[in-house]
Length: 256
Ligand code: PGA
Image (cartoon, rainbow, N blue to C red):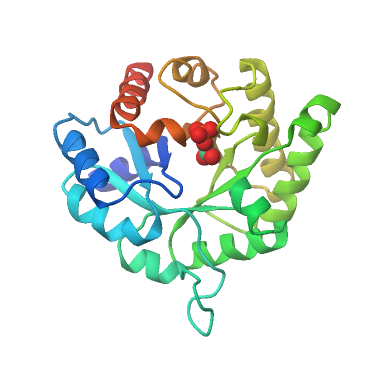
């Protein structure tokens, strides 16, 4: 019974996701882990770090005693076979990953990942018992011309599998990633609400929506104050352990 209650509570946790992208190597991971080891963590949050896939295991061995999950930055849509260079979702599960990012805008642009491709990867991740964090986001052109809501709606409809139990959506406006620019609180609220409405009306399901794009220690409180925000996806600021922990402590404060 207790376990059920804890699991239920856990389902409502806020998520802090740290996307390291193609950054940091062994010595930086050692330093980063040392700083994490001296931090006090609270149970009220789910934290996940997404290192480059070759370092997933290395990072895991250094922080496995901490309440921090490990995730992968992408996965393929097949479990095994002649797919040179691809990463299988079942392998990721096998080495201890909990989450996987799918359809990050950098992969959509640089690797030509279409909505259909992203949908297949999301389905495979679910089948492998990983929790997908499906990234969506509009370009500046869409934002300026007033078509952002429609663009995201279409991206969701085409990228999300028809049935799912546990998925996060990360709303990451492309014009905000790595630029220091963030949408206003009302724009974030409007989009997160819209995403939840689309999921409810088209998929008859509910979903958690986290915000990503230039999150840093000074803007995180304002972002978290938007009550439709269920967590954050941090890129650049997660590479610096001090900034990452400052964001973590602001989030804990916000929850208390
Ligand atoms: P950023 O990246 O925080 O550096 O803007 C976010 C992301 O791409 O996930």
